[in-house]
Length: 552
Image (cartoon, rainbow, N blue to C red; front, side, top):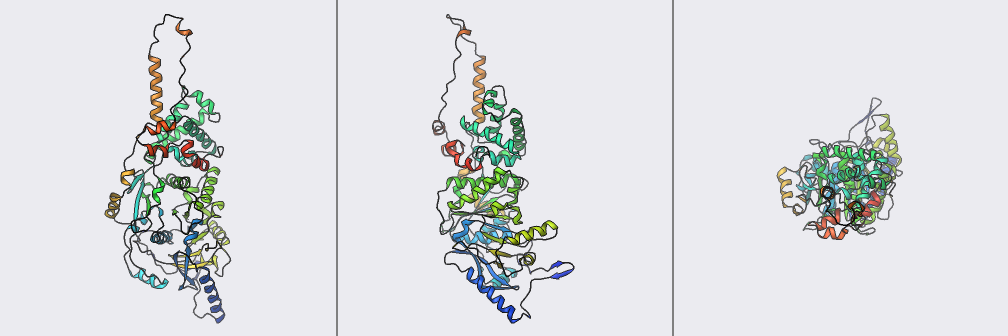
């Protein structure tokens, strides 16, 4: 939500065909209308009455009036069934994320937030009461108290405020990297072969320069034999990949890849008081690189799936992951990439991780993924164009039957209002409820720089990730190999008394290379090496989800 715009706003009029339309109110309503409204209210009240822990969205609204005695909630136990928070710009999506994250933290559930605009950093600071907040709290029956929540700030490669986090190129994988580079499906498949080659030769791909070194080697005279053995990789395609990598690096992307690699298990922490830690990945400084940060978020999900044990359906999730600006993830995605997302979303539920996609319209999310999102919070949609009207009808068709006129309601919602339906504790959809949302209790604006910098300085993650490391990876390995070959070529052969030197068989290079264990154990970055090597041993499960279509 843009800064300076109030969270509390009266329900706007909807203008259509020169006439002003607003949601109906109860004045002059007939007894029959009252009876219908009461029956609808009773249905919603019963549908959102849960036995276990739950998050509160707000109060049910019937005919424009909020009913605090009919709260709209979502059970903690079904948050791993994923969800969607959608709505046009300025309708309150960010504040919905904030109020959900607050309650999750308060109930001991860690939260991950991608903070695109920097607004969510306010979770580290208590909110400040004002007339609007007081009015909303009274309207929805909320006992509002300004509260700060335990917050961690991360940044991609150290660009912007936050502890720098990185990913090794090996574990990022060919499919995710192809999405960032904008490669077509043929080039994506070829890049997969390059990763396979690096894995088989134990050439660690930590940084972009390591991958460039491998591609350059394969296109050199020395590497032509290896390139030929790969079969599906042509020298022309390898050249295209190399050029894209160079351009990508020139844009400053080197900072996002390397070691120590971020361990996504660090997202699953709680504070000393038992509250779940809220991890904010600060992205304002990289807003101009949407393909990169959205794909990086997908890598984090894949890494979580790889690392976490199966837990089935716990009473509350181990982590809730909010994927903001989700449309950026799907724009221009290959079929292999979309299939991988669908598979990850489907499987990660059993790891106790809930994923909420946040975007402007449900049509931004592919149908196969949307079908797996059991919890829906839909803020106002706009219908200014024929395409908007078509999207509105499509959104309405995805809701259960309701007494509301959803086509009218979804274009008439005020800021901080939403249409909600979630999964009950027994897995059935709840009644559709027009909801006036509660107000977040933390600051609904960015925290000041002093607060953020103080949190970063006190974080235990600083010692783990702040300083980049550089071990001998593919770049250094290939340089050493080429230097050794050059030195051998420059050394004159010793004089021999026996047969001419030309008749002596050439010495064969040793076939056995040092094993993974031998190389890693002798490394100064043992743990990081195990996580970022990208070999079959270290990353095959992640590769099985985010490999190329051909390899899968």
